[in-house]
Picture 1 (cartoon, rainbow, N blue to C red):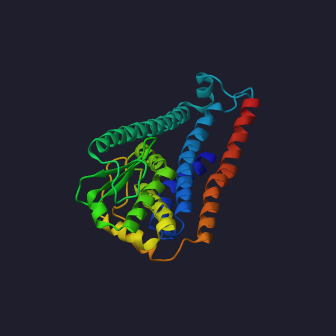
Picture 2: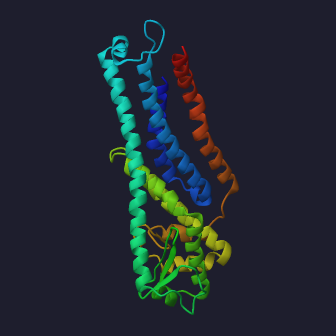
Picture 3: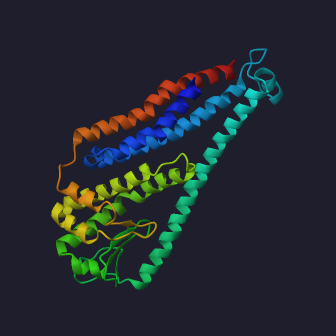
Length: 312
């Protein structure tokens, strides 16, 4: 029953919950809490999937004729029979495979992303200027001789904020300050690490299981967090104008751009209702419940049974 419950929770958290959360509009008014909720959903789904596999595999340690847990393959087969034994072994192997695939995905995404950033950072350091008299001096700022307005940041230990000559021409001083505040907010909060986690989880699961809902939603939410930081320093109007000017900007792989496909949604949000504290509190409570309730209600019973078998 524990295995079935864990599997049901995992399927719900992988399918209906992300789809419903991705279609909701309330995260626009509580982006930080929504990111935490998305993280809890992803973590709870992974833990539930692992727990389902381990709960089934734990049946390999059923009590033998003497009441002690079976400790050899022959004794396990004698108690369970070949069909059940093979099923439990296959489930355990799949659980280990999923864990290994997730570890490989995390390491692979981290290495590939940092490699691309290092290469792009080297390029912008070679072809970009360090600062411009019309822009207040900013650590790590590089200006490219490109007519199209663009602005993005390269996170990391040696971070960079990259803007173009077209950005300097199209934006006023206030708008330029807003766009720089937006990019610096990404760097300070290390939003790239949040994206890496969701990218790795997305890559780890097979195509017929995974969904892009979580990854797309989190991309938008971290942009909203950076928007909020820029609004606190420059106000909503300069930021909205800067976002519109840089709307066609696309970030290179591994970077975080000011523009993008969600520009219209972000500008409308700047002109709409402010962030909601009650919504944020509700999201935080739900995120905590997603992690605590399944653990208490589902994990404790089969862990207690496993302990009884081991100590009996």
